[in-house]
Structure formats: structure tokens, C-alpha cells
Amino acid sequence: MDFLIQRLPLYLDGAWVTIQLTIGGCALAFVLAMFFGIMGTIRHWLPRAISTVYVEVFRGIAALVLMFWMAFALPQLSGFRLDDMFAAILALGLNVGAYGAEVVRSSINAVPKAQVEATVALNLSWFQRMRLVVLPQAWAQMLPTFGNLVIELMKATAVVYLIGVADLTAIAQNMRESTGETVIAFIGAFVLYYLIAQVLIFGMRLLERRANRKLGRTPPRGGGMRLPFKPASAGTTQAGGI
Amino acid sequence: MPPSDTTVNEEPQGVGDGSQDQSLIVFDDVVKRFGDLTVLDDLNFSVAPGERVTLIGPSGSGKTTILRLLMTLEKITEGVIWVGGEPFSHMRRGQGLVHASEGYLRARRKRIGMVFQQFNLFPNMTVRQNIIEAPVHVLGTPKDEANTRAEELLDLVGLGEKIDAHPTQLSGGQQQRVAIARALAMQPEILLLDEVTSALDPELVAGVLDVLREVAETTDITMLCVTHEMSFARDVSHRVLMFDQGRIAEEGPPEQIFGDPREDRTKSFLRSVLDNDF
Image 1 (cartoon, one colour):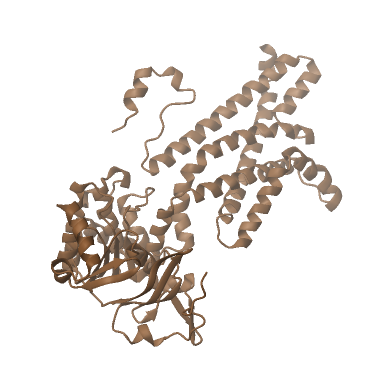
Image 2 (cartoon, each protein chain N blue to C red; image 1 turned 90 degrees about the horizontal axis):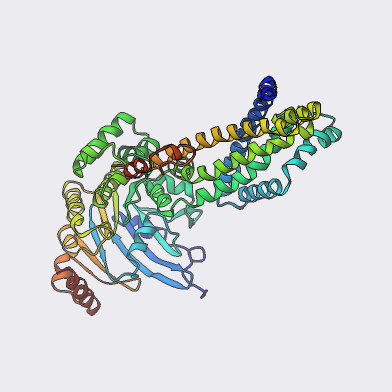
């Protein structure tokens, strides 16, 4: 235990790098997912084709290989070297964004046709329809899957130590090599990864709840870590709402 | 597909047809097919400004398709629809007519409003937002003005106190009354009503019909109404069109259609719906 407490600052530095990678990767993935996902719902063939190419290419390439390519191959080809951190974020964002684009596309397509017809009857433009009606409704549908992708992305950051970024995994690895305390060194990483994941899950659940409330749906109650601490009766009597 | 001799692009269209008329809406040789199924078969009829027309007939006879064509929710197969003396389903190009572009429709569609069988309120908005968003964004109405108008319209439909409710908190009848207010907020010249009471529980129908009666009495909005409520059709409409298999089987003032139908198809149809009603 002392071992971990003494080295906590190092672990926290590593965790902070992991958090930065996660936030950066998520931000990029979100923008790409929205952009290519919406493009995938346009009736004209050209934007749809571009969207399909993006999704198929980056879904098909392992994030690790993409990262190696950005970090090692790109400098050789272009003579221009990306910051390792930036290369990692780019690779993660491009990869997860491709999955996200499919989620966005299918969520938009799942908005009932009658809703779109109502926007036609009110003479809304395509842009107004997307912004006012389709995306707010599709949003609630996207969030549960987005939650999974966020966690996936966070865990995928663990490979960045292979291109020399000092993330949480890299710190644990160093610790093991320098001290030989294999078991303990990795337990520190376990705990921190788990805590980061819990915070992300909690945040995504808040977003989901808010999205459902906006659609006038009763949000699903409980779940996560709070459920075991609640008396069973409280959960069931309150669940009905009004 | 059978070769057609009335395709818009082949034949020099009578560009004068709809524009000479005083009518607000003209259906000119309109054909609508879904694949091999012909839903509207060479349909001709017109509606005068301020006229209230009810479309009746067995299901599958093409009534709803007429409203959907007018609302541009479906694309016309052949023929032309005119609104206010201008081609509506098509636009002029050179001497002839081509299918209307989205831009052309955007400039004209705001004359028409529609109320749907399933209400189609936006669940992500409150009642107020449902009513004001389109006037604010499409017509450029200032927000204050749109809000005042929304309050007036909700009073008209008897739901003034529900302005900040969510659609899911309302009954079907209340939702439909909000949908009527939403359509009226766009100040359409033409209001299309597509079986607006068919999805409602019986005890909620009267409230919705009362609102529509009030709209009919206090405004000069042109109405096209598909309904199975025969007493409503009799009270409100100037003219009734009886449809059968994509054609007009009989038309006339409501007293004649309901009191003294001439066609056998009309008689048997009325007998079947009136049996269900009473």
C-alpha cells in the first residue's frame, strides 16, 4: 500500500494524460461522427458515398496500426512529425468517429417518418428540420451507444504507450520494470482506469436522463453504483413518477 | 410500366388551364401510382377560395393521397396541381412544366397547412414551442408576436393553460387540438385535415370537431377534409366529393349527397358508415 501512496503523484500524472487523450479523442470522434453521420442520411448519392468511405476505411483499420502510421510512417512520407499526443488523439478519434457515424446515421433514420412529414407541412428547411426536430429526437437514441463508445475509447488509450506517450499504462509498466513489483504496479492502474470509467458512465447517464426528460419520457431509474445502496422499496414506489 | 400518353414532358401542357381559373386549387388530370397500383386515376376537380370540401369514400379510394399530394408529401405521377393560378406540383421551364424543385416548393408551400391523423406533434418541444417555432423560423415572425398568437390560438382550442406542457402529458384529443393550433399559427390559406379524429377515443372526438367548426365559422380558410364523421361533413362543408377507386363517384352539396345520393356506390357507402355511427 505504501508503495502506491508514495508513487501516487506519478500515477496521477499518467491518469491525467489518459484523461486528456480520452477528452481529445471523444471531441474529435464526436465531431466526425456527427458530420459523417448526418452526411450519410442525405438523399443525394455523393455525400452518402463520402460518408460510407470514411466509415468503412476507419472502421476497418485497427486503431493501433493507425496510430503507428501517424507516429512513424507519416514523418517518413511527409517529413513532418506530429506531436505524439496529437497523433494518438487523431488515430483514436478517427477510429471511434467511424463507429459513431453509424450510430448517428441509424438514429436519425429511426426518427419516425411522420415527424419529418410534420416539418414539411410547416415548411421548415432541411437545416431547420435537422436542428429543431430530427437531431434533438435522434440524440436520445444515440446516447446509450455513445456511452459505450466513450468507454471503449478510454480503454483504447492504453495502447498509446507503444508510441511513447506516458499515459497511465506506461507509468504502470515503468513502475513494474523499475521496482519489479508487478502485481502492485498494475493494481494502481486498474483502480484509476476503473474510477475514470465510472465518472464517464455517470456523466453519460446524466446526459441520457436529460435527453429523455426533454422528450417527455420518464427516465429509467437507478442503475450504476447507486442501486445497491438504495432500499428496494424506495426504487419501486418512486419509479412511476406522477 | 404501360406507355402513357399524358406524360407531362411529352405533351405541350395546357399551361393556361389552371391559371385562367378563379379556383384556388385545381387538380388537372392528376394520376398517382405507387408501383403498379393506381391510387388516383385521371382526377380533375377544383376548389374555390374559402370553400370547404369534404372527401368521403371507402378506405383505399385515394382521399388521403389527394391531401398528401397537395402537401407535397408525395410526388405526382402525371398531371398538374395548380394553387392560386400558378403551377404547384410543377414549375414553368421554357414553354413546358417540370417537377417543382424544393426551392420552388419552399416559396409556395407555406400557403398550405395540414393536420394529421396521428397529430405528429414534436415530442422534444413544449406545446408553446410546437406552435411558435415554424412561424419564427419560416415566416420570420418576431418571437413576442408569435407567443401572443400562440396564446390566442390555444385559447381558441381551449388549452390556454397547457402552453408549457409537453405533448406526452396531453390526451389524444388535446394533442390534436394543439396540432390544429400549430397549423393555424402559420396562417395558411388552405387547411388540410386528414382523418383528424380517427385516432381518438370516441369521447374526445367532439372536442376536436367543435374546434374545427369554430375555425370554419370564424375564418375564411379553404378546407379540404378527409373524414368519416358524416355529421361534421354535413354541417361544415359546402361540397362533398364521394371517392371510389381513385375517381370521383359523385359530388354535390352535403344536403344532396347525404339526403338524396344518386349513385349506388354512394348509397352503399353511406349505409355502411351510418350503420356504424348509430
